[in-house]
Image (cartoon, rainbow, N blue to C red):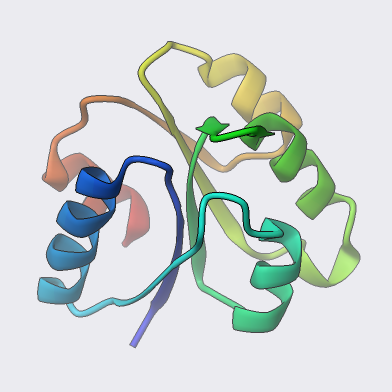
Length: 113
């Protein structure tokens, strides 16, 4: 079962995504908004990290850059989401995909599969 690590600060979005992804056969681990994301990625070893660009006091941009600097995490697929169109910046920092919010569940599932 593919594992998705979820780093998102909107609680409603977290429940919706958890429900959707579990129905589609994914294992979902949701992180606390102040979690150490790179450490969680190392611990959980997910197939993909789904992360909001704005995570409470943390910057998803900084987190994705930090993850890409850890050789052991080079293969983790990172999907960044934001209400702002910051696709270029996300991809430059090392994200594999960018989804503009609000996105359709089908678009997310295509990216994850």
